[in-house]
Image (cartoon, rainbow, N blue to C red; front, side, top):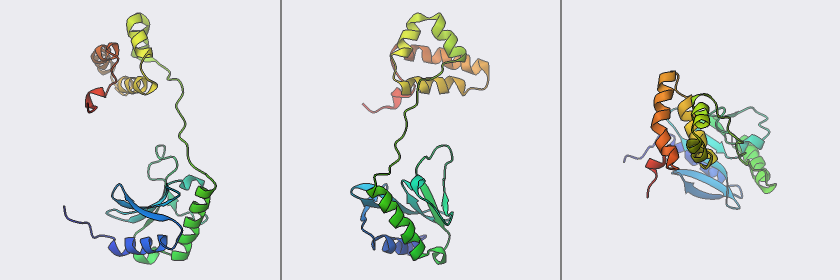
Amino acid sequence: MKENTAWKEEIALLNSIMTSTEMEHSIKWGIDVYTYNGQNVVGICGFKNYVGIWFYNGVFMSDPEKVFINAQENKTKALRQWRFTSKEEINEKLILSYVNEAIQNEKEGKRWIPQRSGEQEISGLLAEALESNPELKTAFESLSNYKQKEYLEHINSAKREATQEARLEKIKPMILEGKGLNDKYLKK
C-alpha cells in the first residue's frame, strides 16, 4: 500500500506541538494519538481536504475561538474536530491553549459517558405481531435491548407497508430462535 504523503509537514508540525505537552504519544487506529494517564485526549489525522486535531472529550471545552466542528451531528457526542487546510493556519500558541484545557479536563475527570437508551416503544406491525403471538412476544422480550432495537429499526425503516410485512415474516423465525438481526455476521 502506498503511503499517503499529503499533509506530511502539517502533521509533523502538529506532532511537535503535542510533544511539548505532558501527554504520551501512541499510534491507535493508524493515527497519532496523545494520551494522559492512558486516556485519549488528542488525535491527529490527515484527510483529502484537510488535516485535523480531534479532541476526544471536546464537548467539555470552552472553544473561545469557535474552531470546533462536530463532524457527525446527532451521532458524535463528545468528539470535536479542529480542521486546517494549510500549514499557515496552524497557530502553535492557540493550539497549546486548547490542548492544555483538554489535559486539565482529563485531570479533572471530565469524560463523556454514553447514556443507555431506555425502553423501546414497540409500535406498528411488530407490536401487532407480538400481541397476536404470545410465543413470539416471549422470545422477543427475552432478547437484549440492543437486539430488540435492531429489529424495531429494521421493520420501521421500511417505507412501504408491504416491505415491513415481508421483513416481519423473515425475522419471526430468528426471534423465535433467540437470534439478533445481525448475529449471522458474528465470528464463531
